[in-house]
Image 1 (cartoon, one colour):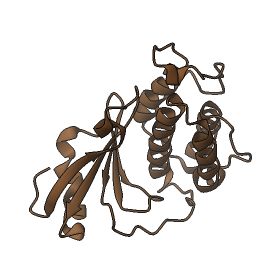
Image 2: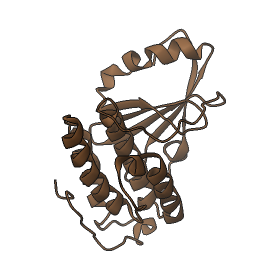
Image 3: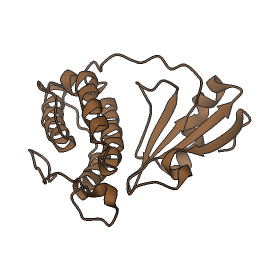
Length: 207
């Protein structure tokens, strides 16, 4: 990433440690002398990656620009040490449905990687947070207890909101992320993945 405000870029997380799983994301920590200038140009600087989704994380402690590339592959560009006030739960309208969709699939892809690594308590905790900030505003009454259930309930409510507001969300990124979640049921030689739950389907799951 070439820009005068970029002082350094460092790969972090499981990719840097050599312990990445099948669906692990790529975490890049960026040091900058001028965050505001770099942040304004970041989408343009990363456009050559042809992201399906790009957005700033609403709930991270430091600014984090998140991308999903075709594959799908999740990339986080993290500005460590800078403040990032958490945003409130989504307010649902015709103008925000697409942003909500991007946020949901990014969150779901990240949770799929954690489920694949056997971090089920973390997944359960995050599903509660997802319900508070995204699913409940969309109309999901009860918090989901599995990622598959979260996807099924979200798709139900997204269809209702599309009809309510007369909008249509592009299905591309959701199709790719659902393929990853279905793959959680597939056998693997990695012993961390021997905890897989029984396959569960819900409305809209096979779409």
